[in-house]
Image (tube, rainbow, N blue to C red; front, side):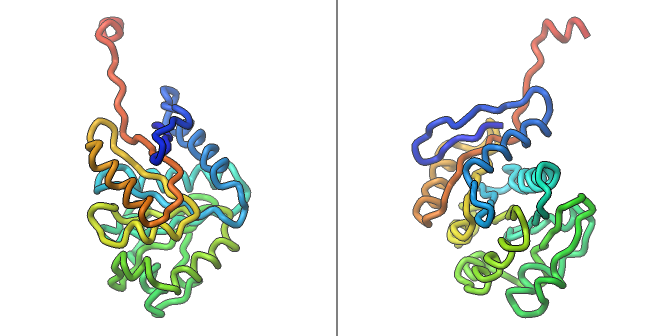
Length: 226
């Protein structure tokens, strides 16, 4: 994994971990804390150019690490209007969730649900149809995020892919910071640039890029010793 600035391409820190993903995510969380130091400004969105970049996994793991590393409650929001799936990970029904709250079909307290991970609460996408443009332009979403900032120490948001869903970048702007997930040795540089440009144009606070699903090749001489 690697956290890297999008705008100036300057390396913040290479924390590729050969000691396990947990340590890598812990180091990433520490960097995010440095980027978002204000206690009431800790809504962090996960974004990506396309699907299959490891964005959702990143959001889940950061939420779990945050719950372990801090004493404050942590919220995980599924705002992926293209293919919401976080409820499946935690073996929950799709709703009520974010879309139901925005459509006034449920209250936020009815929609918030425990995940089974200590300290982590989830707000699933929900049952109501909800487009990324609506999500980005809804003042109710802005008010909701503001109220959630006061209730949770950290809020991690899984968003829709930037290049697949119009309005995804505009919604990411509502977060206090955005991490761009990029699949190692798979996502084309041109697509990464386009995704970064979309975030910049929308006025999002891009914290950096995280390389996901990196594979380490075991040298042949080690195989011979196994």
